[in-house]
Image (cartoon, rainbow, N blue to C red; front, side, top):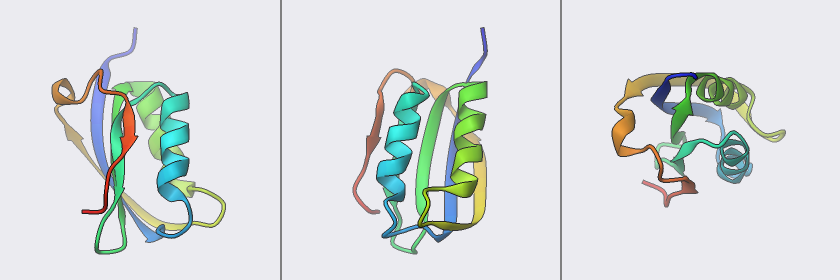
Length: 96
């Protein structure tokens, strides 16, 4: 069984106004990940993904491309503590 990990990512480029958050929710739920996604006031998208390492890595790879209308220039990631996120499902948050 794969280890559970949690990662916070900041996705930049043309990523707002292109359904990035809804796309992220759909894919993360398909991968059975916990966490959240939100727009940032600086024009980026921030997300937290928590789950088995292979699914989290797959989600991060998907974010490098994004939905069809997006143009991703960078994905910055940092490991975080999984204990506060695990088991909460995946949701979309308000802009912060």
